[in-house]
Amino acid sequence: MAFTATQIPDIGSLLPAMGYCDEQIHDLEQTINSSGCDAVVIDTPSDLMRVITLNKPATRVRYCIKEIGDANLEEVIEVFLEQVSA
Image 1 (cartoon, one colour):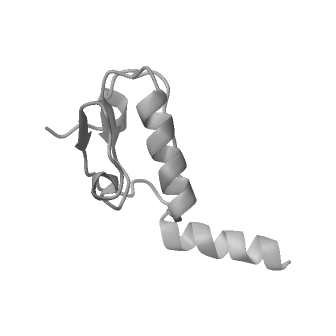
Image 2 (cartoon, helix red, strand yellow; image 1 turned 90 degrees about the horizontal axis):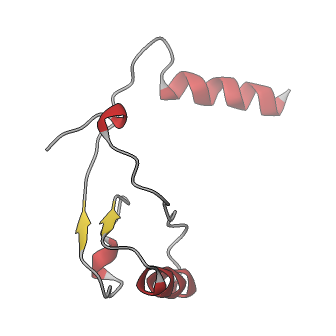
């Protein structure tokens, strides 16, 4: 089922997945498994369920980004690079 960001209900705390070295993967697995959550929704670009073992129900979701309005990613990056090089 497709949703926009405004249609997703408040789901409580989120755990960001940062990096994927062996130690970080282990730490992420341990953090999720020791949490009191009921289920895990994974929305990372890579399929973390291939590299971690979870002790609670989990599913992977996918999403796409649609740029709206005047700004686009290329323009935002160009402005940023101009600012940091000035």
